[in-house]
Amino acid sequence: MSDLITTLEQQERDLVLDAFTHDDAWELGSLIRGIAHEAGHAVGIDIRRPGLGLFRAATPGITPDQHVWIDRKAAVVLRMEQSSALVDARLSAAGVDPAAIGWLGAEYAVTGGSFPIRVRGAGVVAAATASGLSSTEDHDLVVAGLRAFLEGRR
Image: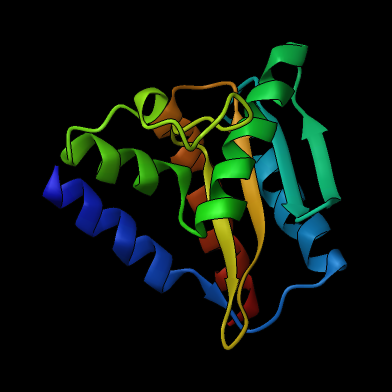
C-alpha cells in the first residue's frame, strides 16, 4: 500500500499549475472528455471550485448515477485537499473504514476519481472528477488529462 501512497503523493506534487481560470477548466475538461471518448469509455466529467461548477460533460452511455458519484468524490477533494484515491489509500493503509469514522457523511465517497487542481502559491482551487469506470481508471483518466494539460502549457 505504501508504494501506492507514494505514487499518489508524487502525482499531486507533479501536477501543480501556475494558474487556473474558468477557460482553463473548459480546456482541461474537454481534454479529459476527449481521452475518454477516444477510448470508448462511458464517463461523466466535472470540474468545480467550491460552490461553483466550471465544466460538466458526459460521454455516451453513462447514467445519472455517475453524476451523484462525481459530487461525492469531488466533496472529498474539496474538503481534504487531496485526491480521493489518496484519501482512500491512506485510510485503507491505516485499517480505517471511512463509513465507520463518522465524520464523512453520505455526501462523500472515498474512492478514486477526483483530483485536486492545485495552483502554485494558492493551494487547491478546484477538483477535477471522473466517474463511470473503476475508481482506479477514473483517477488515471483525470491524471492523464492533467498531464496533457500541463504538457500543452510548456
